[in-house]
Length: 387
Ligand SMILES: Cc1cc2nc3c(=O)[nH]c(=O)nc-3n(C[C@H](O)[C@H](O)[C@H](O)COP(=O)(O)OP(=O)(O)OC[C@H]3O[C@@H](n4cnc5c(N)ncnc54)[C@H](O)[C@@H]3O)c2cc1C
Image (tube, rainbow, N blue to C red; front, top):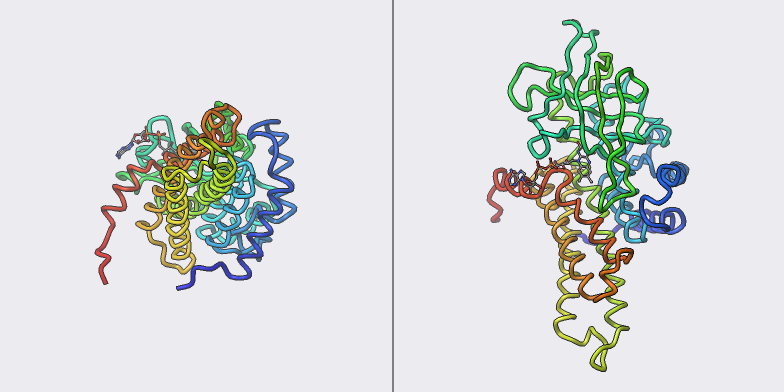
């Protein structure tokens, strides 16, 4: 067991951190709209950050999940807009990784290089207005146009809360293609901007992660050729699971990065701010709050790193992934509330870092499936852990 990052990982962390400081820190998330987004995206593409987990043969960096996670974490810790990093992560973890692991040779040859080089941006769409936590209750349909292997599908339906929808060139869309119960009915399709009947309505402004564009995807008789079926008919749940395994570890490193950044600023504050003739940190209640914040950060990192490490070793553990996802998001919110309290009135200002941190952490409890569901699933899958 070795808890220290390797020298290679230290280089990746340093690279991500200095890149983020130079290119991704600045005005508040969402400022400047999509043109600001495009500038950041281009900078990431030229630094080869749009294909961290994508195979080297297709122009990606070929990094594992743990190495990529460390880079996302470093960007957030350096002060990058968490919403933008979230969008960058969704592109490669929820869309790129499943394509690279489940796609056919033809699909990979056609799409992966462009994704890795940032010429195509990706997203993943399963949620619908009436199918949120209960993903497999989705109603979007994929009607086969015939019985042969070369026959395509016609997609109809509406997907909600889809990260990257307004900027994505391709979206992996889950729809009901089979007359079978639950997960077995679902297939996943590579739907591309420009296909007839495909449209996007930009989503409303979010409280947090505002730098990640999102929207509703409308599918009105969209003709999807057979070679855009990902993973075979009825295999959509498998694609979804693959996407979520990568996303639930990788994206949640944005939360640990933001926790580290906030903790540093709290430490500086309680050491310099004096009340009752002494620094705040000399009050036992304040030092205890800081110690608990650090404990939560360390625990969150350990859970996340281990879940990612297991996946990299070819032993993905859904209990570890769900518990990491749930714990990280709750720990981040607990730290954000403590940070606000430690800054007093200054922590209540609408444009204060403390408020931005809390707002950016709130969605993590819900996205990638609400924590309640993760606890339920993890408890169901748990095996005895005694040695
Ligand atoms: C920032 C953000 C980005 C997102 N990006 C995407 C995306 O790119 N693609 C995509 O497909 N979706 C995306 N989503 C949607 C996300 O996956 C759903 O919000 C999530 O699955 C929950 O669904 P819901 O919002 O409909 O909540 P509901 O299903 O209505 O649940 C509401 C609440 O009920 C409780 N609850 C639900 N089920 C249970 C249960 N079994 N036990 C106990 N309590 C329960 C939980 O507290 C939950 O938060 C995104 C969401 C957010 C916030």
